[in-house]
Amino acid sequence: MAEDFDLPKGDLMRGKRGVVMGVANNNSIAWGIAAQLAAQGAEMAFTYQGEALERRVRPLAESIGVKLLIPADVSDEASMEAAFAAVKAEFGTIDFLVHAIAFSDKNELKGSLVENTTKANFLRSMEISAWSFIEASRRAAELMPNGGSLICLTYLGSERVIPNYNVMGVAKAALEAATRYIARDLGPKQIRVNAISAGPMRTLSLAGISGGRAMIGKGRSWSPLREDTSMEGIAGCALWLLSALGRSTTGEVIHVDAGFHIVGLPDEEAEGIGG
Ligand code: NAD
Image 1 (cartoon, rainbow, N blue to C red):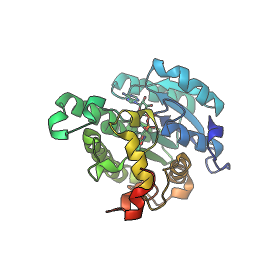
Image 2: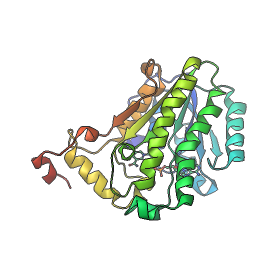
Image 3: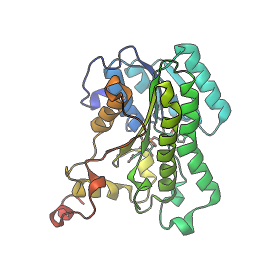
């Protein structure tokens, strides 16, 4: 629940409405971000993958006053059309969008990219994890006559080789490039578009990656801050980007990972910590 996090309250999002895509449960990054936005006065609609998740998502949504809950499978165009039509009918216009969605067959998130990637899963991973942000951006922008702000979630595996991340790394590279092109396209409409590159978090998505727990241990022991990435840190970055505080920033990929991404070789002493 929202009380699990230490979230600063205020009015930075008061009067703003938006769509949060990708809450699956109370560990979801989308949930941490939504809880922070609510604590700053935002009004939101949640889209979630399908009926099977409603039982978990509804109580979370209700706990922060979210009334509009819409099932939307991003690989189904009709479902996306219906979801954004529902948002338009309820809100008219919106100010922000959070895209926190990714998928790949977990059998391909291990071992060799070259040997272990099928064309079908490559295309599906790209569709759900990268294409869907382009489509959601287009649909959201149609509801943003007064400008707005869009964010998506990415990971360092797009820039560096991370064991087992494989096809997701390729999809995240596409997502980050898309972020820059969408920022170029929507900038003249005063719509800002950015990506948050988060350190590893204990979510359903991480559980699908072989050795996901080890990613957390290494993050803690190698990062300059010597700590796990926090949900509060990610949510705070989202608040900055989605509120007026983030004006003038667009097309960026911002790392929120306790500084892990700057390390080329860990300090000898660091390797012994955590693990
Ligand atoms: P999560 O499993 O809680 O969220 C992933 C969401 O994607 C779920 O809500 C799921 O229902 C949704 N989804 C998958 N396929 C979908 C489809 N076809 N249609 C609609 N929704 C679909 O995990 P998370 O870690 O919170 O992931 C959110 C985002 O953060 C993802 O983009 C992920 O890659 C990114 N990310 C996660 C980490 C991490 O370590 N957990 C690190 C960096 C970035």
